[in-house]
Image 1 (tube, rainbow, N blue to C red):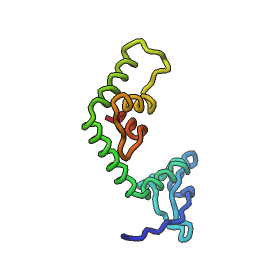
Image 2 (image 1 turned 180 degrees about the horizontal axis):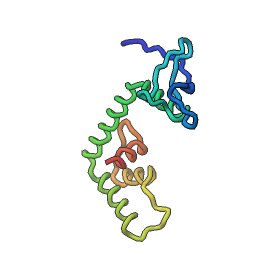
Image 3 (image 1 turned 90 degrees about the vertical axis):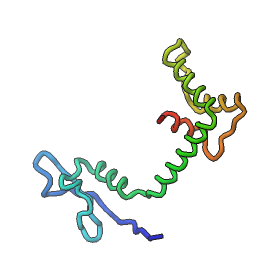
Image 4 (image 1 turned 90 degrees about the horizontal axis):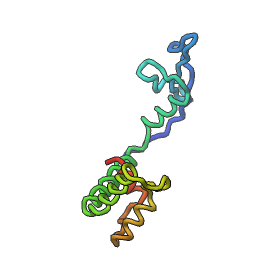
Length: 137
């Protein structure tokens, strides 16, 4: 396993990329002042966008793998228990096409009630996780 060193970076306005009315920002190393990221030579339009891009590019990718693994587990669970997916689809259909009260919505309470009706339990994930994966499908 390799050690990754967190770099101390800051966002500064680039004199070369900025014009009189269009300020552009780049990411630089605090110690050496070397440019680390300049948005492929264009610069970022705001300090916030520059930091957001830097954070995304330097995020912990092992967490992404864990998230994909969890989503795969939930998808497999939904395939094994189609009654849950069918009940959620029916609830969505009723909300869209039928006259239901405006407070009716698909949320974790609905998922928990569907699980209780069918005597099912979630294994290794929450109703919120199941809802987010179901919404993406």
